[in-house]
Length: 308
Length: 253
Image (cartoon, rainbow over all chains, first blue to last red):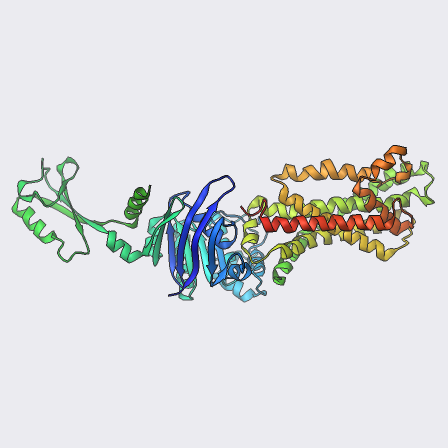
């Protein structure tokens, strides 16, 4: 796949002297969904804002669809849609007009049919003549998304789209994202909700302290770093791991009521069957069994900690 | 140039004007009428003529300028400060629009409103006084040019201001005194000796003088000097805005 957005050695130092981006390089593939994960203040918004033209880069190069954002900024920006993190909307403007206005700003001729499609998709059609001010927070966020989609962008940036959003809207939003992906739109979203990245991204980038720590296919990342744990609950507490099971790397849970076995899920022989057989042989009263896969969150926390 | 963007910005700004058409037009008309009553009738009855023109008619160009200048600055500064204040400036910064589109859209709309208001005041004036217009085309051109140059100036103030207090600062502390001291309601010949010279440092004097010339064919300072001053001011403002967009000053961190 070709890179639709290419970031090379991007540095941003604000006037205050704060260095928000320390030489970031990143290739975003056409048609993918890339999740940028990072703690608050990691540089996610600065990275997005720089690509979109809201923040001036200190040094480095960014191209969007082959257009340099400094020398060929009109062509570069015309391809991009941005859903900002903060809800900033004209309070007295009507929904339909506001979305049509956004389309016009990108140089596209009026197309009420397209605006209607976008509004319907975001369940905003019945609010089209409503002023923005009285709308709920969730509705306002839908308006922001509609505005970003009004000019049919090829690359869509969603900056923390689900911060403070209810479950229903979150689901609607992912439906929209899936739809856009089907149309070949490249989507970059920032989030600190790991489950979000886990649920919809193709690739995950982890950013902390103004640096990209890694960018990897979500599946291979999870497989590479994914550990599984088997937790065996016991009917009666035990004081220590039985002698017969020593050397299997078991840890005793609180109160001596469980044993935890950690293994690599990608291995052919996980050793679970042998372990359970041995436990029975040792006369341990097994009450329940549960397995748990380490999530992106664990991986993320480990990486960010290591990065510090 | 992104013409669609200019169209939507201009249309949106004008829509705000027409949405509040009553407030937009009523207040200049009412305040102009008040000026006529106070200056024209009450004080004017004690002043015979100024340079052969009745005092009531004499103050009309000053009244129009007073309102056009303050409205241009107020409209343009608010139009660009409001998006900065509520955060919708991001939308403009991320869009494929630059200096040309933003200036044409925002300043064009602000100047358009001022021209409309100026014409409404002129129409109101005809109800009160007998008003000759010696150079009607020049008068309209000067009205448009003044609206444009002070809308550009207001645009700069709107970007410069960090809050609504600062937004009021320049109009209140600089513009209003300059306008009142700029010969809106008198000829600078009526000032005592040294003040006539001091007044020549006030840029509004040139504006007022040439605008009054378009009505009565007499001017305090030569017409050519006034024109050079106005064009220089406009060019200066345009240059400043061009630099703002180039450097990102107070809009793009």
